[in-house]
Structures are given as structure tokens and as C-alpha cells.
Amino acid sequence: MAEAYIVAAARTAGGRKGGKLAGWHPADLAAHVIDAVVERAGADPAAVDDVILGCVVQIGQQAMNVARNAVLASTLPESVPGTTVDRQCGSSQQALHFAAQAVMSGTMDVVIAGGVESMTRVPITLSTALPAENGYGVYMSPKMGERYPGVHFSQFTGAEVMARKYDLSRDQLDQYTFDSHRKAIAATQAGWFAEEIVPVDVLPADGGATEAHTVDEGIRFDASLEAIKAVKLLHPEGRVTAASSSQICDGASACVVASERGLKALGATPIARIHHMSVMGHDPVIMLEAPLVATERALRKAGMSIGDIDLYEVNEAFAPVPLAWLRSTGADPDRLNVHGGAIALGHPLGSSGTKLMTTLLHALKRRRGRYGLQTMCEGGGLANVTIVERLAA
Image (cartoon, rainbow, N blue to C red; front, side, top):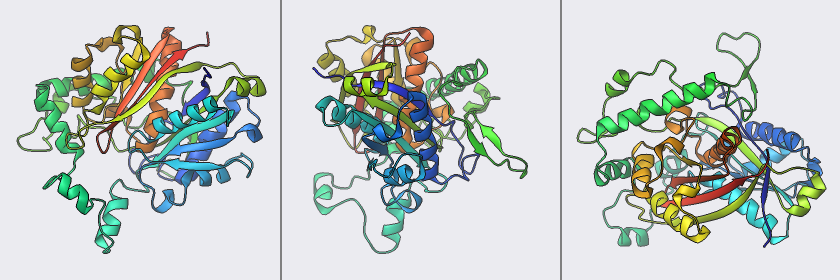
């Protein structure tokens, strides 16, 4: 069977809403990371067969096929095409799957998969609110309404339902939140993110000389459990707070994916092999539970057990998601999101898939692990699962 390999993976450090990356147009930010992974792979830019980028809010500065716009803003030649994927929060993880499928099919040899989201410049509700406010309707169709009468699809509701269903207390969610920051702080201070982060030149708030943005802005270096416990609940009868939810974030990330023929053409040594990839749908009302059943199915299809996996990245959309995932799978908590997750580092929507993969691959390298598993909840009750095998020494 044909194989798909990852040759290079990189990401920007996350930027807070209105923070250090706010001055970057999303197409330019994606182009910056594309150029970086091409350089890291030692690739001839003309050898790239396609660029597939995830992006959730495809309006305004992220409209008109932001993947192609990123190509045109990069050093890649005009001959390199680009297309944009929306599988909600799993968009760039799906981009990685599409890239792998392309090279495994033999129709392409080298594909860049990645994602971008500027949540500062293109707010999360813009693509739904703007048409609705101007008389152009909403995404909820009459037929959907018949199937789900009276339902308002909400990730916030889903997070509360998961907390109750899996008997996760406010205290447990707050402790998990604190641990996410604690792990992100440790990884940053130890320099473990340095290799995966592409520096981005930004102007400081005081208007001085440009500086390199290399540290995730969302990390609360002064985080305390007491302060987290003091954050107001999102719902009076709920258990989830803004602190135990992922942070709004600007960012971009990318991976270079190649077939065996592509590796020879690049003269590159792969850092990982894609061992398994799958996606499935689940209950769209609870919405966030899909990673649990998707992981079970993925391991079964791969002929593996959770104990075979050295590290896991489960997106921290809300603290109940990874905690419920741990409870469902029986996974080792010490292998989960070992450098923190979106609660501390931020969740740049369409970029998060390849962002998590980048962190997973570098963590496997540092710990000399073999297999890594990545999954994330996605709007509509979806979940992608990717299992990779580390190859490089």
C-alpha cells in the first residue's frame, strides 16, 4: 500500500485577540508559514503539487479561497494551486488527510497541508451574523429544522451536557485548566516549542522597532488555581467558565506531505508516516462528543489499543472534552496534551489541526516516542482522528 509521509511541520506562536498577530493579514500569515515549511523541507517550491488550507470563517479577509491567496502571497510559483477546506475546528486536520490521500493515490507527490485563522480580523460569528442581519438568511434549513425541532446548535450547550454526562465537576474542570497552563508554561520556559515555532515579525504596542513573536500569547504565566476558580460560570447552573474554554487566537500552521516518489524528488528524510486517518459524524446536538467514539473506531480499524499510543493531542475546545475522552478511552493522563492545549495556547480554529500535529510530532521527537494520536471535536458533531508514526531519529 502507498504511504504518506510528513517531511516538515511548523506553526506560528498564537496571538491573542487584538494581540501581536493582529497586524497580519491572514493570507500573508499563512504564506509566511508556507515559506517556512518549504525551506525546512529543503523543497524546490515548484515541486509542490497543491496547497490545502483549513479555514473556518471564510468571509472578508479570509474569503475568495484563502489558500490560493496565501500561495500568491508566498514565494511559491503561480503554477502551484490552492484550495480551502472547512470542516470547522478540524479543518486543517482534514486538509492533512486530503493531502495524504492525494499523495497515496499517486496523483500528487508533494502537498502542503495547513490552516490559518485570524480571529481578530475575521470574528468567529461574522459569516453567520452578517448575512442574517442583512436579510440573507441562516444556515439552519427547513429540513434540518424538521429533523431537529426546536434545537439551537451550540458548542457551549454541548460542553455543559458533556460535563454532566461524564460527571465532571467544576473543580475538576478548573484543575484541568490550571494544569493546561502549567504544562504550557513549563514547555515554553524549557524551550520545547522553539523548534516548531516560526518567528513572525510584529510591531510592539509602543510603536518601536519590530520584534519576533515567538511565545504563545494566551499562556497565563501568573495562572493560579484560585484565580481560575474565581471566574464566573458561563451559565448560572453550569460548570464551564471562560477559563475552562479555549482561547480566541490568531495563527497559522502547515505540514509538507510527500509520497515515496516525492521524498526522492525532494531528497528529504521524513519525520513521520501517517499510520491511520479517519473522520466520522456523531450527535450534532451534544456536538463535542464525537472524538470519543471516533477514537474507539480509529484504534479498532488500525488494529491498535490506546496503550500502543505514546502521546495524544485532544483539542481543548472546552475542558470537558479531553476529560471525557480520558474517561471513555481509559488513556493515560500523563500522555495527554503534554505541553498544554488550547485552553492555554489558544484555538485558531482552521489552523488548529496542523498546529496540534506540529506540536505532537515535536513532542514525540523529544520524548523518543513512536506513535501519536490526534483528534478534535468539530461543529456539526464531527471528529477527525490521525495516528502518526515517528520516523526520524
